[in-house]
Amino acid sequence: MDPAEKEKEKEEDLKQELMFQSFNNTNCFVNNPDSLEIQCMDSADKEKIKEEEQQQEEEKREETPTHRQRLDREKFAKLLLRKYCDKNQQSDNLLYDMKISDTFISDRPVAFKAYIRDDEKELFIDTFQASAFSFLISHDRIYVKISKIFNYRSTKNTNAKMVCLIGKPDFDEKFDISKLQNDFWPAIKNNLLDIVPISYTQEEYESCLILKS
Image (cartoon, rainbow, N blue to C red; front, side, top):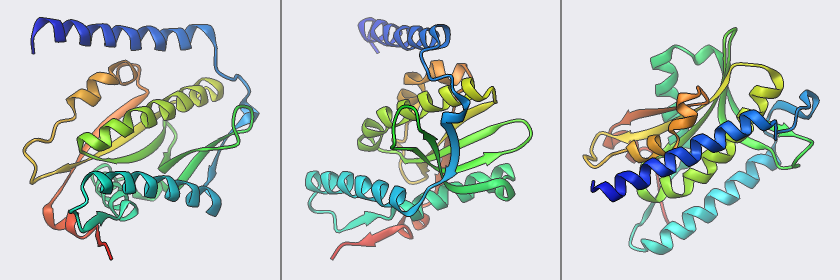
């Protein structure tokens, strides 16, 4: 990396750090505990998310029309969650398809694949596939969710954070999440975010594919 690129990355890190400090110092989020609740997603929530994911999948297929298979996102998410829970012995506390409902700002909840709560922390978990296309879309998605968790943590005075499970293909030597980690370093440093690679095999990946008609 040349000096100009390094300097640009430093500037981006500084901007995000200053933004986080601004959120923390100006109390710009809603300070109303009754407006924030953790709930199970209902059928309407799930259908809305499914429609958005299908739209993203259609856009991706238009760019790569020769592909005859697509990823079953729900099955892939369950694969990553199972591996994460097995490693961290958290299966007993796991709740699937949870959301933070905010009646003050928006009727549309912020959804997560899973939620874990114990005596010391609350973990809001989401899953992502490791590809340049996915990370490009995921950046804003992660940012919005971290912001919501920061609001929730500040308002409820609880130890809450987001956990991003990134599928790590054993068969892809180009796998790299350093850019995503660098982009969100302020959130990681402030204990708002964990980015966790989850390894999977070619066979496990193929088990999550759906043949297009």
